[in-house]
Structure formats: structure tokens, C-alpha cells
Amino acid sequence: MFDIKLFNSQSKEKNIFNPLDPSDVKMYVCGPTVYERAHIGNARPVIVFDMLFRLLRYKYGKNSVSYARNFTDVDDKINASAIKTGRSIDEITNETIKWFIEDMAALGNLEPTFKPRATEYINSMIAMIEELIGIGYAYESKNHVLFEVSKYKNYGTLSRRSLDDMIAGARVEIAPYKKNPMDFVLWKPSKDKEPGWKSPWGFGRPGWHIECSAMSREIFGQKFDIHGGGLDLAFPHHENEKAQSCCLSSEEDFAQVWMHNEMLQINGKKMSKSLGNYFSPKELMDDGVPGGAVRLMYLNTHYRKPLDWTKNKLSENHRLYRKWIDLIEKSETGEVSSNVVNAIADDLNTPLALTEMHKLAKTGNLSCLKASGLFLGLFHSGSDINLRKKIPQKVASLIDNLLKERDEARLRKDYARADELRDGFVRSGLQINDTKEGITWELTDNFDYKKLEALK
Image 1 (cartoon, rainbow, N blue to C red):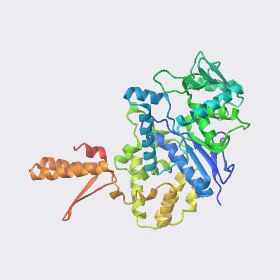
Image 2 (image 1 turned 90 degrees about the vertical axis):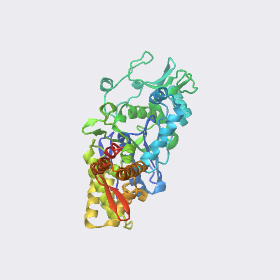
Image 3 (image 1 turned 120 degrees about the vertical axis):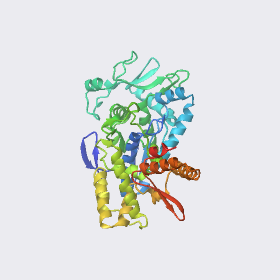
Image 4 (image 1 turned 180 degrees about the horizontal axis):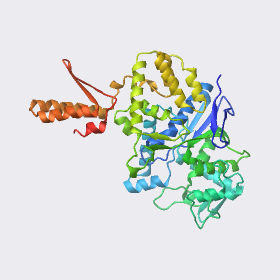
């Protein structure tokens, strides 16, 4: 049986992974704050840790691995969205969670074993805060409860920073109710229009960091195997989680292995709404790129390296994915390639796994190519098989309407409009075939939905 080697963000070493209990492997990953539709950056940790989930299930068995990924559904950004839109918080969070589940499934991700919502664990958070106060690691001040960082001697060991470095490099809130600028909020008061719950410290709501500590303890107990998330969470979120949870146990850490994926950028720049380079997987799929091709784009870069997203790279992955789909369309599902598995077992080396996939395609080992692709979350459930038949309804409806308009233009002898549509089809990558049986069409590798939409 193969070994799994994982890079531990805390030790900065890659070691063989040995679970606490091979019959009950536990992984917790920090999920999204649900106030708007997930963008392509949000999808990266989902795909990274889905890949690890698949690997763990492959080695230890489907029923021997538990994966929890939470939803933060109480947050200032959600409150701001409710005020801006006039919608209720429940309406926003329920809709956004539904979108997230649908969009991540369309990218080939398995459902986690547990999908806890922060608001379902408020009592657990209150109990945890009371315990921290009771043992002297937290204090109440002006209706706030704060964790006293100076009391925890190992603070900073995850991110490997001194307190001075952390204060200099972080947005530290200077507040009169804090003993020290680094002390972080466990509970804070809520204003009249803000969501809140009754607590020993008044009507309020939890701080962000206590949420995951309480949920992971409630689901997995004091210690579990793997804690994951984006690199942006290592400090302060995970550092604070670690401090809270370790203070309530005799353990030096509450997760055996800490794993963090690097960030995603667009054409070498940080993704930002102000730069106009901010978009979602849903938009890509609506524009005709199948979920499997989008996933392939992520897998081409190792999770510990920044992913530079470009339109050309996405087109290349789209073409490759269509090529593989065409190859395996009528193939049986064989055995997963041991080389592919070994690549993933070596700290999720997805680029090496894809190199092995290229070899399988080149040698014509199609049944193995198909099985290995399914292991990687590609060709998921056969839903991407025969892509030409799997066109988003939005795209198909627009094409049908434009073809109807072209026919009507011909009938009224408006040849200028008919030619404009014909030329527009070519520019957008829509291939039209006029046959004796009628008109057929298909999307080429260079299909651009926005160009097609401009013809309306």
C-alpha cells in the first residue's frame, strides 16, 4: 500500500501521514463566508481539499474518512449585504449556500461529510468562551469577551511570527476594551438591527475565530488529523483557532497536520472587483466551459504555488479536456493508474498526475485514463461526457434565437443582417452546418459567449 506524504504548514516539512485512527480519519477545512456567489479564488481550497478527501478515501476506505467544511453565516459582510439589498440575512445566506453547493458540485467536488453552519453552533461557542474565561485565558470588558494572547505561550508557532511582527504586519484593532492590541474578540455586542443571541455577556454574536474551534470540537473532539484552508487564513484565523483550542486541552496542537493552499491571481494581478477581473465559476460554465475543464485549470498548478489564471490557459485546458472526453466517451472504466495515485499521494502533486494522464492518452490506455480522470474529479459522474450535448441552457437558447433571427432576415431579404449574424457566429466560435436534414451547430474550442451575446 502506498504512503501519503503531506507538507505541514507548521513544521514546514513534508512527512508521511499517519492518522490518529486509520478507521476514522478526520479533516476540517475552513469554508466560505456566505454573502455573495463564490468566485474562482473561493473554489481553489475546495478543489485542493476535495483532492485530498478523494485520496484519503482511496487509501482508507469511503466509510473511514470524515470531512467537515463549514459555512460562516454570521458576519459583518453579510449584515452589510442585508442593509444594501434590503433582503433578510436568512434569505441571503440560504441562497448563497445553495449556490455554493451547486457550483462546487459542477466543478467535480464531492460533498463533505459535514457542512456545519456557524449559527447552528452558537451554544457550543458560548460554552467554549465560558471555559476559556474560567481557566484564565479570556476576559470580559465592556460587553466584549477577548482572548488574552499573552497568556498563551505558544502563540505564533503556527505562522512562525513574533508578537511584534504580527502587530506590525496585521490590521490590529486598537480598542479601549483590550488589555493588549493583539487580544482578539470571542464575543461582541450586537446593535438593534444586527443578528444576535442571548449570552452571559449580553445580547451579541461570536467573533470569527471561535466559530471553527467550536464546530471542529463539537464534530471531531479535542484533536483530529488535518486542518486546511487558504494561506490567507494562516494568520490570524488559524493562529487564533489553535490558541483557543489548545488552551482547552492538554495538547500542543488540536490538528496533527496544518495545510494551506496558495492564492489565485489573474494575469499576475490580485483578483479585485475594482480591476474588473473578478468572476465566478458559474460565469465560466454559463459561457460554455464545462466544469471539468475549469477543474483541470486548477489541477495544473501545485496547491502550494500561486495559480496565475489567464484566458489563454483556460482555453488550453478546455481544448485538452474536450480531447480527453472524446477519447474516453465510449471507453470502459478500468483501473486507476498507480502512477497517478502516487503523484497525488506525494503532497497532492496534481501537475505530475496530469503528466501521467497525458502518457495514458498517448499510449491509448483509455480505460485507465477514464478511471484516473474520475479519481481526479474529472469526467465526474459522466456529466461532461459528450460535451456537445451538454450545453448550458442559457447558451443553447441564445443560439436558437439567433438562428431563428437569421432565417427571418433571409425571408425578408435583409441580407445585411443575415451576413452580420453569419460573420458573428464565426467570430464567437459557433460552427453552423446547413445540411439537408436541417441546421446543426457545435461550439469550437474558441467559443466566446460574450461575442455571441453581442449579436442580439
